[in-house]
Structure formats: C-alpha cells, structure tokens
Amino acid sequence: MHRPAARAAKLAGLALPTTALLAIGCRTSPTATPPATQEVTVQELRRDLYAFAADSFLGRETGTEAADRAAHFLADRLRALGVEPAGDSGFFQRVPLLRGGYGPGTRFEVAGTGGGTPLALGTDLVPLPSLGRGTAPPRLHAEGELTYLGYVSGPNAAGSNGAGEGDVAGKVVVLVNGAPPGTAPAERASLEAEGRIGPRLRELLPLKPAAVIVLTEGKSAEFVGQLARRLTLESGDGLSVGEPDSARTLPMILLGPARPGSPLLPDGWPGRGAPGPLAGLRFSARVDNAFTAVNVVGVVRGRDPTLNGSYVAYGAHYDHIGVQHGAAGDSIANGADDDGSGSVTLLALARLFTESARPRRSVLFVWHVGEEEGLLGSDWFTTHPTVPIDSVVAQLNADMIGRNAPDSIYIVGPNAAPNGQSRVLGEVLDSVNGARARPFLVNREWDSPTHPEQIYFRSDHFNYARRGVPIVFLTTGLHADYHRVTDEPDRIDYEKLARVAMLMYDTGRALADRPTRPR
View (tube, rainbow, N blue to C red):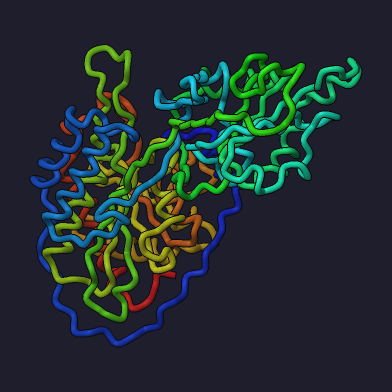
C-alpha cells in the first residue's frame, strides 16, 4: 500500500469516469462439477512468503534487478502450476516507466570530420520532458544532420516559410531565442522572453524534425538554468508511467544556453552565421530516464464457453520500498505484509483454481508493479489491458492481509466506489463471509472516499474502479511495521492469512459461477 501523497490527494478530487459494463443475461448453466475441497494451507503461505520476502530480493523496489527477479519468481511458479500466460510477453506485461532524474546513459554529441564533441547534461543541454499535461511525450533518442534556423523571432529570424518540410524533416534543427546583433536595448527583453519559444515549437514540430534545440539568451537563459537545476540536480528518484520510444510522436526537444563557439551554432556566431545546414556536422542524443518494468499476468480458463471470455480478477502488488539507506542494522524493507502477503496469497489461489473444478468464468491474476510509486502498474494495465477491460466483471484486490486481530478485516469499495458500481459485489462477499463457520468481523470505516486515511485511493483497486470495474479491497490494516524494515515474515499471522485467502477464493468462485455480472 503506497503512502498518501500529493498525487493521491489530487486523485481524490477527480470525478471518476464510469465505463458502462454490458450485462450478461442469464443462461442455463452447464452441469457443474462439485467444488473442490482443497484449502489454502498455512504451510504453503509460510513457505512462499519466507522466500518472497527474503533479504535476497532486497525489498523488491521497482526499477531494480531484484524486483525483476521477484517477477520471475512469480512467473516460474505460474508456469509450474499450468496457468495460462496472459501478458504481452508470456506472463509479463511490459510497463514503460520514467525516472524522476536522468541516468548515466544520457549523452549528447556533435560529430564531424574532426571527431566528436560531447555536450554536458544541465550545463549545455537539458531535455524538455513534456510540453504539458495531455500532450504526447518527446522522443528519447535522436540523430540527424544539424541545421541552424536562426533566431526564434525578430528581423533575423527564419520564418516558417523558409523552413519547409523538405528542409527540416529528419534533421536536428537549432534556433536561438534571443536578440540578434544590433537590436535596440529597449527591444532585447521582448525578444529574449521564454514565452516566444512555445509558438515557434508549435510551428516546427509538425514538420517532423529529428530534434529541436532551442538555445537561449537573457531572461530565457535564466529560465532554462532554473529548469536544468530542477530536472538534473533537484529531481528525486520518483517514477511515473511513460511511453516506449517507438510510440512517441514528438521529436526530442532540448534547451540550453547560447554561447559563442558552441558546436551547435555557425562559426562566428553571433556576428556571423546565416540560417542553413551546418555542413558536415551531425548531432546524436540519448536521454536515459526510461526503463521497462513488468506486471505479471496469468489466467485460469473457465469451463463455460459462453462465459469464459469474461474474468473475475485478483490483484496484488509485488513491489515494495527496497533498501533503506542509512538505517542502522537491518536496512532491507522486505515488505512481508506489504504486499508479500497478497502476492503469495494469489499464488495459492492460482494453485487452488488449477487443481479444483474450473468455474464458469475465467479467473485473471495480476501482480502489479510500481504500486508503491503511485499505482503505476495498475494504471498501465487498466489503460492497456491484456484482456478487454470491459470483460473484467469484478476485481478483488489484496494488500496487507496478514496482521492485526485474528477475526478483523477491512473492506473498501462497496460504498466508496462511484455510482454504486461495487455495491452488489460487496453483498456477494458479505454473503460468502456470513456463511463461513468463523466469519470475519468486517470493519467498513475506510470504505469512503472522504475518510482522512484516503485508503480507497491508496492501492491498485482504485485504477480498476475509476474505469468502471466493480472492486472490493481486502486489507487487515496498517500497523507499526508499515514501510519499515521490521515488516518481516515472522510477524505474519499465517492462520489468519489462510482464512483471508479462502474468503477471497470462495467469493471469486461465487462471482465466476454467477450467470450475471455483480451490478
């Protein structure tokens, strides 16, 4: 479960979209095989959690090799169980992510007959990561012949009429946002303003250059200096969902200071240098702030051919917060409860569904990456689903389900989700729980979008709910070891964890055998 943050607070104020789910009418059920009598066992949960929350996985922080090994641990187990792969690459769904800062692979170079001249990140150039909310992201790789287009505006500017598509397509174009030589002092500030950059970019980007480099003077140079410090020196290591470079439609956009003698400008600039190609010079660049993580996805196919194209989904997140540098003694936050408990429970449920009589609908299992970074894996899965999102009739999310009082459990969703979309799902779970020999005492105080803890917004079910999927979030609550190195496997109540697992199994099977969706 990720900590509440500014992002969660912003999400709390959004009007959540409701995707209409088509109701499936009642049909005569094929003859059903009696449900299996197998149970999720304490032994398998303890065995798997001691392995999954071991120091060897280094806290499973998204973006690390250890998190990748955790994903392979889950995929190997699913393969051994005979679960059907349901990612875009076997059991893996690739999730493109962006780091908050730039990695050591970031490079810029101007190459000519005399060799290459490297340019420094921050000092010489800084990538513009976005043109604003709702716009396509710029490319992370660029290469092409250098062409100088003159000033952004003013009497020596190269206007759009002088830079046709045939002139700049596939090339790296350079402009100066500043005042040409001889400009009257009273006019300099206007020509150096950063506000002139945006309109010129809007003219150039449709012409499909490989990259646009804007070098700046005066006030706009101060603005670029501040941007460079923020992006290269002050940026944290936070992550966000990105797009693979192959899907990016905008050229790379770079900003930097305009300096005499720069290899990006004509010889003799600013006193000389007309717009045109910089003969024999090529520019290449790579921005190192993108990487690919994975969700782990599998399916147990239902037995009813009329219903097995729809899914009851189970979700958990397999990432945690990694190594806590500076911590005295033990520095590895193993995340046994958060969310090792949910992750190994889903493995046990996958085993149970493969070994028992198949339900009518199919059962989808998704282990999400990047939950601790802001629900990133579930955001990607619900916007780029490997099964149609409107075929998911319900999602049961498990996050931190192995601690606190033996008979207590929190349920979130039936009241908190918009438009009553999860109300029927909550009724099904309550019915299943009430029929058990030892039912849980259900606490509903967090089942509200306005509760101060904002629990509804803090785990992966939220991204399913905001796309219209009925959800229920099961958790046994916060505790003193939350996001601490003391969240260890020996503190889990395995008997309680097994009981939560069976509540999830019985609820999921009831949903999967229903002829209609829980709406």
